[in-house]
Image (cartoon, rainbow, N blue to C red; front, side, top):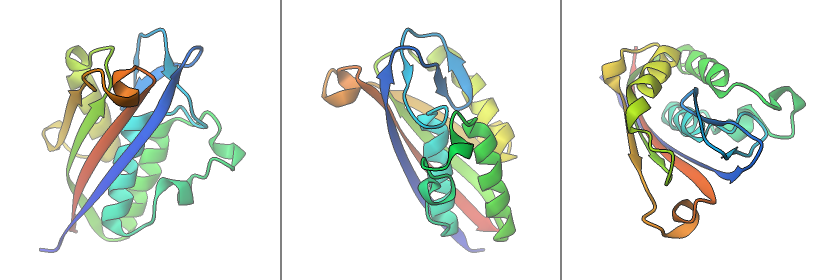
Length: 159
């Protein structure tokens, strides 16, 4: 069996007047993420990890922020497009591991919901999706609560 691995990373600034969406789940918070789409950093990192593992460039190539069609786009819907691209390459999603980096709100109470939402979009069982969270310990843009970042690693195999 041929196994492929990709890594994805994204970050967005926290601003007033925008929703905070992580892994397709809306979190109640006074600040949200600024971006061309819904700015879902977690889903963006997952998309880039999948695209990287499949050798399909990155989300900026497929969904450029210069294209008005993606203004305010639902990132989970875009993830569905990426999953289709992965399958068209004859690849299956084996596992996705993620880390959200932010001070607050805490993710723990809604971790299972995020995992289930991503797993459904990926077309795999929830046990193959892991969602972790970490703070910046007061250091850097995450620690100063200026933004949120996310990392993802995706493992694919030939179908």
